[in-house]
Amino acid sequence: MSTAPPRVLMVGTALGGRGGIASVVDVLRADGLFEREGVVYVATHAEGRRLDKLGSALRGLWRSGRACLGAGGRPAIVHVHAGSHASFMRKSLVLLMARMGGARTVFHLHGGGFSRYAQVEAGPLLRRWIRHTLEASSRVIALSPGWAAWVRQCAPRAQVEVVPNPVHLAPSTARERAEAGRILFLGRLDPAKGVDELLQAGAALAVRHPQLRLVLGGTGDLDWVRRRAFDLGIAGRVETPGWLDAAARDAQLARAWLFCLPSHAEGLPMSVLEAMSAGVPVVATEVGGVPETLADGALGLLVPPHDAAALARVIGRLLDDGQLHAELACAARATVERHYAAGVVCGKFAALYAQLLDERAQ
Image 1 (cartoon, helix red, strand yellow):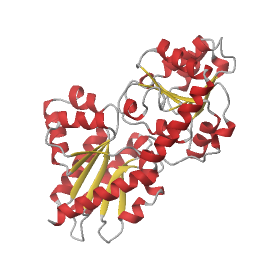
Image 2 (cartoon, one colour):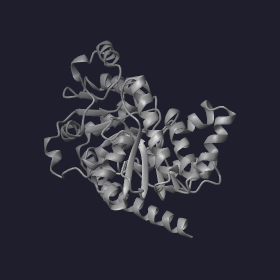
Image 3 (cartoon, rainbow, N blue to C red):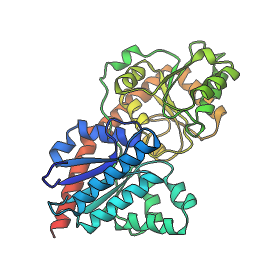
Image 4 (cartoon, rainbow, N blue to C red):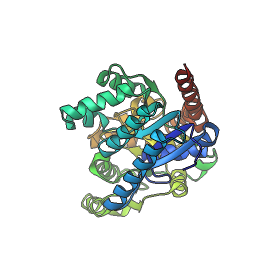
């Protein structure tokens, strides 16, 4: 860490890692937010074995504490990216140290499972700590108006602002390689992401759509996916390329006819924004901030979670209707340009930081 005090100390998961928080931070950094706003980044989580994760957490907490409470200069703003469970606990400790050091604080809420964590899984003491952390933060960032309403219900005194996830704009020529019938999924390969419903939908559509292929990109139980595809009679139509880095992801998006994310719970998935940016029509479930981002019938198509039959009907509609396919692709990309492009979202953070610095100076 630099010996000069950072203007903004940002805390999250390891740069270049997997998952939504890492993707968001990578976009912010690539767009130049760190340089323009004097951001120093500290990771409190990294992929790997349990000991590796523990070591990353301890190092990150030590660095954060030294920055927030040390005598050599303290950050004016501490901005944490937090999910549920261990992620929340680590970041709530960072925010506590930041408040003790006099910094303005930003709690940036990620993860579609946070409401269940806060209301169902947490005991009484933890629920009180969650509410206190939200209300003690100078700002809570929610990814959509729906999530902002939930935060206000959970923590009535919290000061909430809506800032969506940012995404890079894909080249407009990328769609020239799209392959009819090719359906792309990106995410963890487990039931909570709706993978089984997608496989069932693929099996139902296979007879009428001989070109249909399912490309399931991500880590998880690949053996289960392959067994399930075999049992459904579509093993030859399913590809499991594993986790995809940015270049491989963009290459798959360029080939995809549509993108499908039938998750049971979400915040504001980066994969949906990445597909919209690439001009790939999206089919997704009505969960989290997805309906507010993906207006049904205008920017994409929505289905209820856990409903394989509905998923098959909607995917089939998009496979059969070329005009609808083109209209959704065009509208989605235009929406990303206006509201979710990296420069637009970074401008929102710059304005927020300026406001917090003014409040701190008063």
